[in-house]
Image (cartoon, rainbow, N blue to C red; front, top):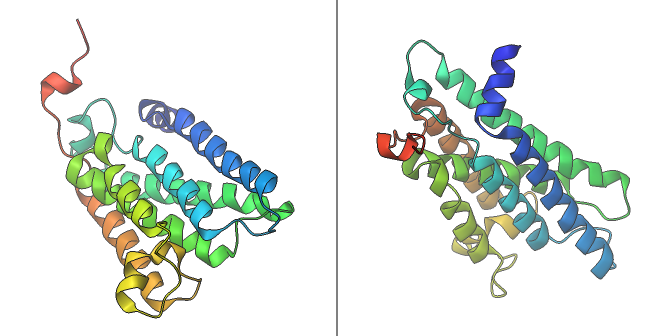
Amino acid sequence: MRWLQLHLRSRRVPLALATVTALIALAWALSLAYTDSVTISARTASLAIMLAAVAVGTTLNGADDALDHTMAVNWPVRRAGHLLLAAAAITALLSLSMITDTRYEPFALILRNTAGLLGLTALGATVLGAALAWIAPLTWTLIAVLPMMGPSRDLKMQVAGWLIQPAGTTAATACAVILAVTGLLAYALRGCPVRPVSETAPDQ
């Protein structure tokens, strides 16, 4: 299991996990303090999940890009496992609220938004690199939570605001699934772009 410890440490997973936990707990605490609803709003939940996905995005590459692309390691499987475990961790942390009076629910919405935003983050990491993986999830989430966005029967609105559509909305679910699957496959098969040596070399 030493390789797993080294893998997690090289990708700053402990720090990211602590950050994710703190962000989810903060959103829960604010909702508990400032609202009377037992259900955390879809907008607040989406923002919390987006920030958690952004924190995970920092773990999608290591310090040595060459090592992350060597053929001696089955990287597609490791990358896919990394992303799936991240999704499971975020979902589990969100689900802990079910034992309290203020909850992230319904579970289907939490699962949909977590999968879609992590897929979007992974896709951003594949195209732009882990350092810029936050751009896509942050941009789409900020658009989705705008005041003029909301549950709608219009297909375009359902896609643009898929994060805040009710659970079971077909277009929103399809959008999340496409993002999740595309991001998972792209990241697992390609990983992050190889950075110039000048960006990865230690300071002298």
